[in-house]
Amino acid sequence: MLEVQPIKKKKKLVNNRRKSRELVMKSIYRGILNQFDINQIKKDIKDDPDYLKADEVFYHQIFDGIMNNMDQLNNEISSFIDRPIKKLSPIEHSILCISVYELMYDALIPYKVAINEGVELAKTFGGIDGYKYINGVLDKVAEKRRPLEFLKH
Image (tube, rainbow, N blue to C red):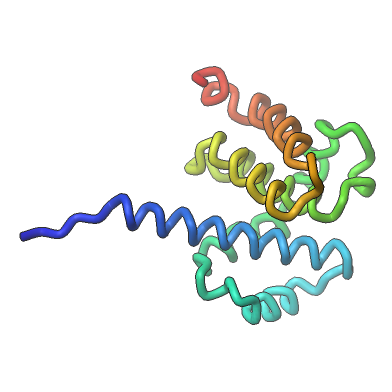
């Protein structure tokens, strides 16, 4: 008899990716505060208790992608926020980098997932109503970057 468990595997994949996004957020946060050495951050993050729960390949894909495109991401974010990017909290900035990166560079991630993951990170790590701000910014980015997908919903 075949044992099929796609839902459980999908849930595990989602949880692993969520942990990966948390680690990326922590890595970017550390970099923003400390004017980072990327290689040291990637080395140090392996000591995080959640590292073994994360999807390591996904972590590196997202983190490296953000680091390689930081100027473009900051330009995109700046066009949708109501203050200079340096006035964003490091947590908000980190979260926006992750979700905007996914919206701009990873078409395999549905825009709603990119937004929801950013909102969930903001609820967990951000200020009291920070998730509302994150949601509003990401909604505008999604409308610009994923117009066909955005209009369908």
